[in-house]
Length: 487
Image (cartoon, rainbow, N blue to C red; front, side, top):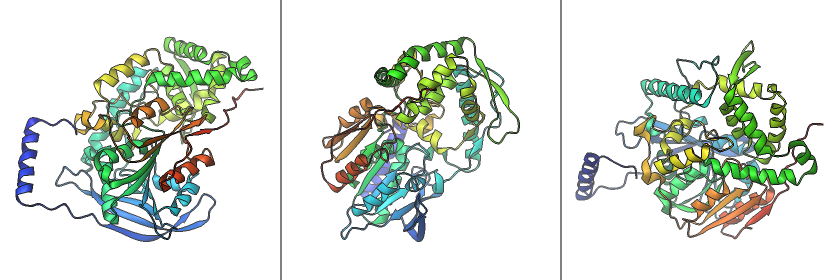
């Protein structure tokens, strides 16, 4: 529970006494409406489904809050006696559950219908549940100046502050875009469906949301499966764990004769390039998306570290990192010009939900100190999760507080799936979360990455087995990545 001023606690206590003395009843369940929906599979096949709409408050603590509509697709169960509905929680934050169902996870959505109805939810502020227009800061980034960490942090904080002002003026209650509100949305969905429990299936930020549901509505969850685990205190990842990933990558390089000869010590090469860029920013030229002419931008190490952070979620991206640094070491910065300028040219635009959710989940002081200390020598510094912790404290009223981030204890049967080559969410931190689960179970995927559900059919089988109530395997071994070596 977030820390509250004493006057707020007194007011809350008085309201509780009034509620008890007046015999107040629980709020009636929210209503949900359905319409027939034709869903297209990745291969273009049509699946008969239902499009649901659930109306919830934008911020439950605000009595005058506007109502927002959450939309989802429901795939009806093929079972004769369906179990609890299975709710898919997409990652990001900001990814669409409905779009995910139309992608490579589609077969797993269909397979889970054997157990119960399967629901692909667009969380508040996302996709078909969008509630605010994208915002472009009124003062654009100055791309003519060296793009260092300090410059990017300063601009991003000012730009998001401007966008918060614009959204508020448009009638958006920005303090309603928190993981706690989304967790309450899941329970409101359960109540609207008229069921006592739901099962949860989430990945990355979706695991973070799922853990919040377990924290605040644990009795309403029958079972849960999470992959790419992000604990309630793990919005900001530890740089030392990224370094540990590259130790593992180095072992794979050393085991590959061709890669070892081509790349040698990858960490040493990375540090050399980063030091070079920090001392003398490199000018790169490319044409931004939708632009008619190229621009030239001077970049320091931080934008490159951000780019690498976006590449290392899965083995396929990790396998290209050594070749990229070898090219940069040879002075071929055109290799990163397009991706970097494409990303940097869009940094003035914000979508609301992704940024606000991370700011709200926040970071406690002790972890912030630890992250800063590890970032001093970390290969990617603190770039992996940009713009957090860089936006921490920008909106104090939205922070969910230390109570939200405190360790979770749960007896809900939960499967934790981790890939040993997941560069976004570390198996080490997944194990820390799992320690609080009396009925938690681990599945380790050797050489697996972040987007693990579709990476190997055995992972999907384990998900179905566990949600059925069975005991899945605890280890799956995939082939190591093949490093790209130019001829």
